[in-house]
Amino acid sequence: MSGQSTGSVKKPKKNFFRTLSRQWQLVVMSIPMLIYILIFNYSPMWGWITAFQDYKPKKGITGSAFVGLKNFKWLFGRDDFINSIRNTLGMSIINLVLGTVAAVVLAVLLNEVARTMFKRTVQTVTYLPHFLSMVIVVGMAQNIFASNGPINQLLMNIGLIKQPLFFLGEGKFFWWLVGIINVWKEVGWNTIIYIAAMTSIDPSLYEAASIDGAGRWAKIRYITLPGIKSTFVILLIMNIGHLMEAGFEIQYLLGSSLVMDWSQTIDIFVLKYGISKQQYGVATAAGMFKSIVAIILLFAANTIAKRMDEATLI
Image (tube, rainbow, N blue to C red; front, side, top):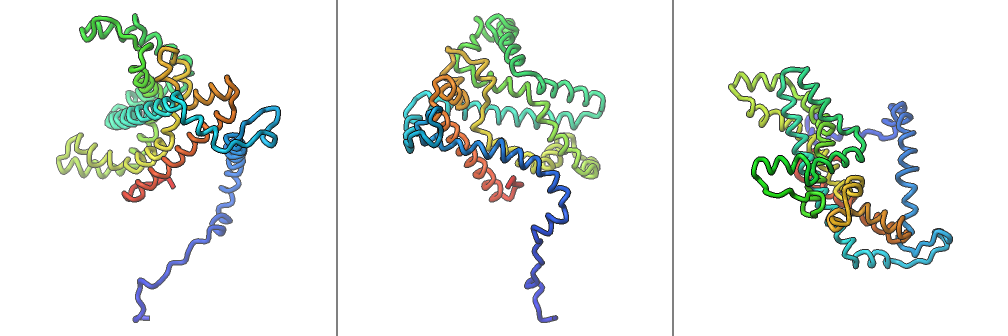
């Protein structure tokens, strides 16, 4: 026994099915959600076949002619589809950056508040917009950013502009308007998970830092932010997987013919050609392209995080 190397001793591998049998209650509880996902997320993928067909509703999937990659070639030959990809990625990146930074900053500031009542009040006020209908939110935004709205009045009163800016009718403003609206609506809701992660940080670390003479900024930099790093990376990976989903409601409600080149996303393109023009094969091909790119982005972000020894989703 003394001659054996301790490094050669192999640890017994956990039996996957034995673990499942020991946790059968959790397995039973997950069955309804698994069925839901299979029915509403995976079974519709059967319809992807229409992306390779000249689909006719009367003939159905089995009777429609197979056209191969014709629908995809048609898509990438159209400027409006290329613009929709650009718009989707542009607005998604703005939403990701602004939303993440705003959520982390607000969570850190709330974590530093000592008065519980004030902290809870701010949390409630900031996450209530999450429950508002997007129709209401867009209606408020249209009034706020109108030519005679409060934003233009404020900018003119402080001397930054001489004439009202046409926020709602110029494409160069549209992406940023969508980003601002999303941040206002979701920032409070997104801070919840970061605040929850901060509560798991050992309070003794802050006490030790105070004894060493660390100030508030030093505690945030060396304790709070590293403490939520794994949560931040996981959420970032998930958000990168949603880069092809810039949204639909805001763009559809806030957009107009004046900003169509800047407001049309892939989802609106799919609605336009799938419902209005009844080109189902083209619409399915566009949706299929979006889903495949999203999967690639998700796995790429997860792989990069794994190689950097960070927390991973998969």
